[in-house]
Image 1 (cartoon, rainbow, N blue to C red):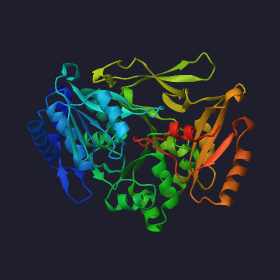
Image 2 (cartoon, one colour):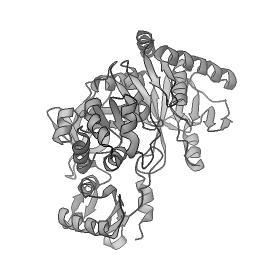
Image 3 (tube, helix red, strand yellow):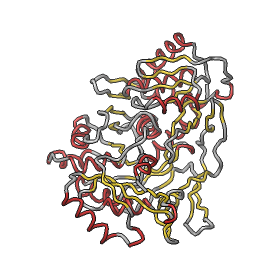
Image 4 (spheres, rainbow, N blue to C red):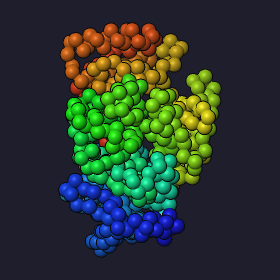
Length: 468
């Protein structure tokens, strides 16, 4: 048994009688019950399917109960778990399966046994296989060891100042890093309580704050689209009054927080959105914004002490790339079931950044930069400006090849109220607030922007919509 699991069992023993998880149906598990239930689940899974340490299980979760049983069951059994969205199409599942080569696939109601004549020795100590789509829409399989994963959870819990007082309302998907590590294991590593929330839908912001308050939550972990929905749909005056009195911390992860959303959220809820920056390959959450910096709207965040942060200047004068040295790095990428390249140290993140007094600020993505007439345009900057336009729900900027005309820029926007007046107001705002070189060649209004199965914007699909 690895040392980190011994330490985790010490956490379980210390808080055995405390509430670890409160489910939607009202059932609660203490830390002791969670560990015992997971052990029984692991024994049953081993007996039914012949799993051995190092095996991989591809699974579609149905809520927090199943997610916790599989995650903690994998800790007991020594196998690897690869969560996948319950709505993922067959082509995505097949692509993931080709990368992972699981011994067992639990796909909603289907159980698929794969051939067992494979060498699992190289995977001993492995725990979680995270599927990351990046910018291509095709999954990458990133394998983490149990030791690094639990250590990263402890580091982030300490950075977040989680403790036995923490009651986090969990609405993030259980299929990627933030939903598992940031919003669950980091809380449990500190003796706190995770509260299962309703799965978030497009209009879920109308009731999210109310539900969190009613369940006695004091911490939220969101993505920007959730925060935006809360801003525009929360109307209950009692909720707005109670929110800053009860909610002690609101973390926001997965994507940069537009400045306009920061301002609107703080004005409405009297609580700041605290940016959490992370990279799956280096172990998940790297830095967290302090409350003071979040209120000042300066976008800087503080790295956890375990990380080594550096900036590498680029020859093309585009700025400096953030380099991260991590003790929690992945075991490697999976290709046809075998471990391929491990993470470089320090890891080149692909993010442009600035540093000040030990803090970091992300200012854009290297590969997302759009070059127009010799100017480098940051989609992240343009999106941040667009987000401050009244009535804009969400925006995305992508570059596209216009042949002899060179690289061009398209702006996709969803509006809270798609009317002629709202579109006209948007046009006037863009003309006034963006330089001519930053103006989009195409502005396309959609009811909703498409998303990948990890919750991130599906920019490849957006590019496919552009009629050059």
